Image 1 (tube, rainbow, N blue to C red):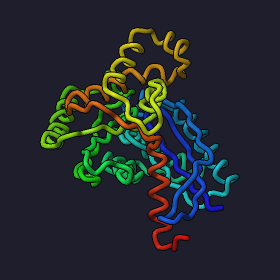
Image 2: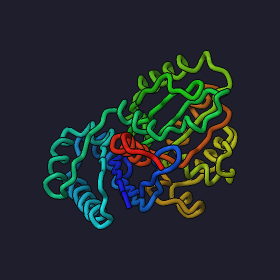
Image 3: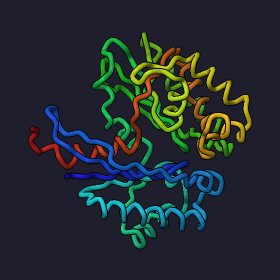
Image 4: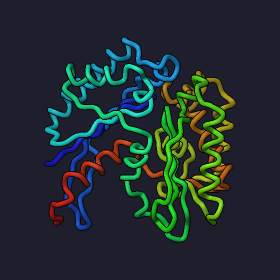
Length: 298
């Protein structure tokens, strides 16, 4: 069995996906075998102090050592580990990467926003899009939001913005960045008709499950706004108990909702589709493209 692994060191959580790779009639695909999420909150350090604290570095190194051991036990043949905005902005990011290499024997790549957007795009969600519609693809993370515009199933523009859930909670989002994002989405969607949204990330997945919509059906802007108003009417503690949310989800779900709602308002999007894919899925797809492109299919 061929197995690949993807590691996403995000601003809110760190994830490991181990996937079983198989040949299919149209190419190679994968089935998720094991997915582990550890809420380290590196963004709190990176955005407020511009460096990762020693306590969190120790936790991160231990997590990476555990991931390395799991990858060995599962006999993973190829992996890619990516660190995003928190590590990009931490002054000691390179030093942290060196310690992970020394103590956990893992190579980590600190990626720029555009590469992050490209990896998410590797999920090739465009294959399932309606050619008669245009789409704004919105991926909301802890430190940044990646946007891509699709027309006739093809990406025509993509950009990463330093607006994310942890950044907002820490009051580290900037007014000018919001304005830049507004100008960018308006410029790239103003001539388009019938624009729909595509949302990825842990928060929109949770909101979609809470909405009760059937998988594959879109969630309406009104449903999303209603859920946001309902959640926002409760305290953090109430959100944890009433909606059975994890503590590290109950706070970030509010700014995440605000990002999605704001973007949908700016573009007039009335419906958003929520495929269950994210950064780690994109990494696995990228590994398949890089390692198996010359292999023959069934």
